[in-house]
Image 1 (cartoon, rainbow, N blue to C red):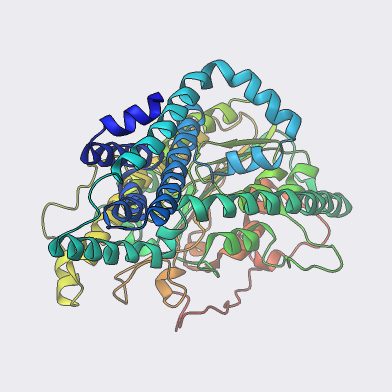
Image 2 (cartoon, one colour):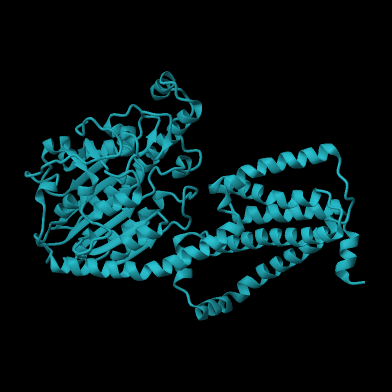
Length: 543
């Protein structure tokens, strides 16, 4: 009698079932974090429940054994691959790091990688193979018992299957099932590989366009400019803009410190409620068309680079599109986040060391773009765990939301959002302090901060998140600082739109080129405001 047959007979069905459940749970926990692990476990549960359902005919028992073994094996392999990527690269399979590596890898490079990693992978592969073997044996052992099931047992299984159906009907849950995720991942890699040739061609065209415009720096001497881009920050939740919760104490202190040299634009707006569209408009001066038939579009980074600036792009986002459309125009790219989507817990403060390294670089002219996650949902992940000063007592903001009839979950979301803004305040303030500290002697230093779009957290409707249909989705902060002369105080009251921000940043960079529109630079005396067309009703843009 073979050892495998002996093992199957020696293993009681209940123990075999327990081993299978343990293997599934372990694989899911190794591959996913927190809430996501619970969601994926629910997707795997029907396989185990199927083993409990009585099947009389031997032929269908064999079919079930093969199907369940294959299904559980998928979850085991999925968990093993995810755990390997997390341990070695702190990345998920759908992160831009992994997608880019897969899209840029040949079969020969794959073989070389596996060969080089063989010692490190040997133990993991051995454990995985042992787990797969035991899975097959345990499935056969688990189905060796009685083919009967009591009525309460049947009702319990049907109820659990109905609960699992919720996961399968939910696209955000379903897409993490191995049978859905990996084919989609393969397609994404193929599409990325195909798109790269186009993106590289677009970047080359943008550089040619920039050189044709003959950009120059109008002032002699060194120059250091820092652009801090953040995500999902609504100025209405910043005490710097009059919010009653103390969410921006450090920026407020710097505003007092710097007096007229730190300009806070009181009426700043994004014209888009999403990141990609907002950044595309910002860097293209509000004019770039993705289908530009004449190929004449300009990009701020290409112009600055052509004029002699050395450019850094450092980001806490994991976004292939942002990386390809904007970041790769820089000389130096640093992406610290290895997990895409809302579940990323990478903190913005991790970028401060990267910023200081760029600021001490000896290049005479530097433009540093710092792309923060800001207050992007999920709000609780945008600050250190437990760092929420607003969740203990009911204050004026909370009481106001109660009077407005907002539910408890929305009030808690506002508390989390405001706590994220407060943590974010410290990071943004430190970027300004570092810029000020490393401003070049005998040259020019400048700093600009704005958000890509706003966020609705019970401001006008019972909703928390991106909101293209309400004004809160577009209300953003915009601040500027520079060495030398103070800003004109009246500029703070000018309405400002983010898709014109590149004209103002060009002023801070002291760039000039063919085709300038000074009337779109909020710092220029000739500034001429034009109200944007938003998808949300906005009666006035000067408030």
